[in-house]
Length: 158
Image 1 (cartoon, rainbow, N blue to C red):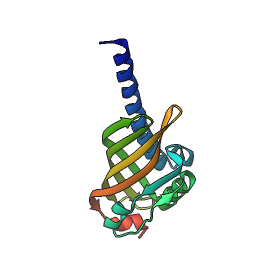
Image 2: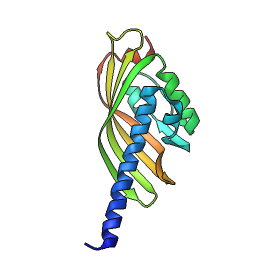
Image 3: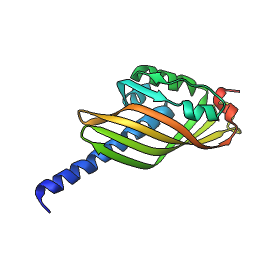
């Protein structure tokens, strides 16, 4: 194998890992209620569309635009909940400074004051990312629900 081929392969592996690291920052930011960490996963003009998933849970959640607005809206909507977001099955494709990520995210939601109730949503994430220096950032994310278990009214704070 040539040195050039090896470095390209190594660079692609590093980029794929960095893309997946972006969704890990996003999930950790949600669960830790860390607005800075959560916002660090998005571009300034990012769009987050949770509508396909939330409609299946009986709620409307319009697309949200902008890094700070997305972080604030997500943390506000989850403020009454304890959550864990577990990412699995990430698949990454690269095209220069753009990337596409598909992943499964299992999202456990429990009312902060009553852990006897919960809703577990397993969602499909479809994510467009762009390179920004040494990191990758989410430019657009669409979340669709694959299945739900438990009490979906937990999400509404009921």
